[in-house]
Every structure is written in C-alpha cells, then in structure tokens.
Amino acid sequence: MIKIFPSILSADFARIMEAVQLVEEAGADGLHIDIMDGHFVPNLTFGPELVASLKEKTNLLLDVHLMVENARHFIHLFAEAGADWLSIHAEGAVHLHYDLQLIKKLGKKAGVVLNPATPIHSLTEVINEVDFVLLMTVNPGWGGQEFIPGCHQKITRLKNWIKGQQLSLPVEIDGGVKIDNFEELIADGADIFVVGSGIYRTPDPAATLRRFKEIAAAQERKE
Ligand code: DX5
Ligand code: ZN
Figure 1 (spheres, rainbow, N blue to C red):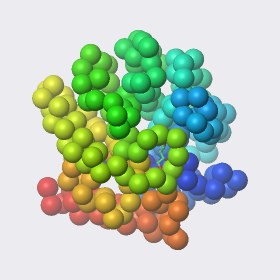
Figure 2: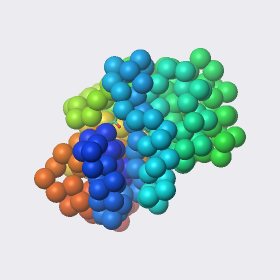
Figure 3: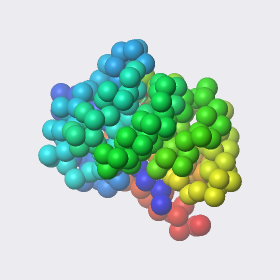
Figure 4: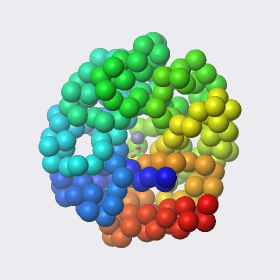
C-alpha cells in the first residue's frame, strides 16, 4: 500500500498544530518529523518535547527521522516522547546493529536511512533487524531541494535487493517528492513517500495531499 507521510519541516513552525491537523484531516498516513542537530547536518530543528506535545494532540503515526550524531543517546528520548517509527542513518552509527535492536526493544519500528552517496550493500549485515529502509533522495539538511535523478534507479535496485533477501520491507523515500514526479516514483517501487515542500509549499496543501492520495489509489487499482 502506498503511503504519504507529510514532513512538517516545510510547515510554518509558528502554526505547527494547524499544519498537522490539516494533513490529518486530508488523509495523511503518518507524520514525518525531521530531527537535526547542527552536527550531522548543518541545520537545527526540533527536540523530543515537540514530539511529546504532538503525540497528545494527533492520532497520526509519528515517523521520527534522526539526523544526529550519537543517535543512541537520542533513541530513548524520542521513544519515550512517543515516536512510533524511529530511523537512524547508516553513516552516523558506529554500532548500527545494536542501535536498531535498541529501537525494537523499546517497542518502536526501526529504520535505517541511507544518504544518496551510501551504497545499498551497507544494509547487508543489519537488514534482519530492520522494519523499513529510508532512502534519502536529496542530501539531508533542508527541505525544498530537487530530487536527485540517479535515485530513481537506486529505489528500484533497493527494492530488488530486498526481494533478493527474501524479505518484503517497505522502502520510504525522502526528498524532492512532488505531484509531478509521484507516478514515476511509484513505478520505481517506493512504498512510502515523505513530502515536505511538495505539500506545505503549495497554494492549497490539503488539496495537494488529496491529489497525492488519488494518484496513489489509481495506481493501486491498476496493479
Ligand atoms: C531533508 C528531510 C526531509 C525534508 C524533505 O533533510 O529529511 O524530510 O522534509 O523535504 P522536501 O519534500 O521538501 O524535499
Ligand atoms: Zn526526513
């Protein structure tokens, strides 16, 4: 099933709850929350307090993407705050296997994130600990960037590689997803689509999200 997770990184931070309610009412399948520490990526965003506060006010699944150094230190904090899915970068973790097990022990879905330059085979030794793979289709740190064209092929290669491991894990993609490239990205094989500026920076974000959902439903009917 194709899912859309709007990313609040592109919302108006001073009106964050309005932005969340808007996508919840328009049919979002989850909410993507980008955590940046100013070290792993050169930008700063939110802490666990925001996640805890949102948890009280929305029923949306909370998909927390950790772009931080020392992710292990933050895993407990965000798990306690109410993250449902927690993803950590393969490039940032010295003990990736342990950290993924920790996320699962805390009762959360564990994801590995791969930057555009990180090869798929970095997953080889941890894939059995993983509930989903998050493929960066821009370099992390900012919303509103262009989709990196070479990632089309990487999505398909990742999907095939997962099948080759006799697994059926969802592939989530993050960065540069827009109405205009959505159908092509579905054809590439992605399952979950993080969309920031492609929803929140359009004139009518709710209508845009509904359009994403219509396109997804039409593609699913074809299959
Ligand atoms: C980028 C973040 C993304 C960001 C995507 O580092 O991980 O989640 O919100 O934004 P768009 O959809 O605008 O490329
Ligand atoms: Zn993200």
